[in-house]
Length: 296
Image (tube, rainbow, N blue to C red; front, side, top):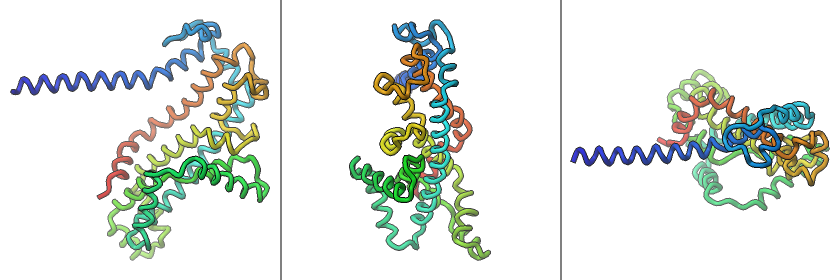
């Protein structure tokens, strides 16, 4: 009986490790292929000679990219949207989660129900688009047109992130809050001095979610911003892919490299910042998700 159990366990481990290895390879290969193609010669890329390792190594694609002003403009726009968009969304989410974590809030259960309801049922893309149009119309009314703030403000909050923060706030002992109130702390001071410091791991996790979402944002930025000088990096990459139908985007590229290696170089540079930041906040990730995802 014991040997049968050990054999079953061994088979389970072999299957598990095999599946996990295949999954890891499936996740890593596209990125490794993009790196190899970005430093390979044009002919090798066009004739699909690049499989995993680069062929005819050269760095002309990166040279073309780094000397293109439109690339740096798109990169700065993405940094702007990611930084301020994360702060905006995180701030509103913290305020909303703090309010929903209070049992004394009037209609608290109703608000929580509608919050979760939006995760179960989506209204569809049309209401979202109308919401963005209303936001754009409001900006246009005050003279702000084709601005990055359109995307930052319109992409406000996410129900899942609010729930994570709410659950983390609910885990803060009420005795600590009561002690702070006795010492004369205001509601805002209780939030900033008690709840936020005690929920740093969850806040860091939610900030990562928002940051990645803003960094990778394409669709709404493409719909709401028509001025090419305000386009973020993902929109710029997409327009570069459409080189033959968008000569304005391709005017700054060396045409010998515009259709292949430069595309992969752009993809690599769009991923690097996330890879650089993630290790520094990885220690908060699992803890923050567990603390915020489990309600006591």
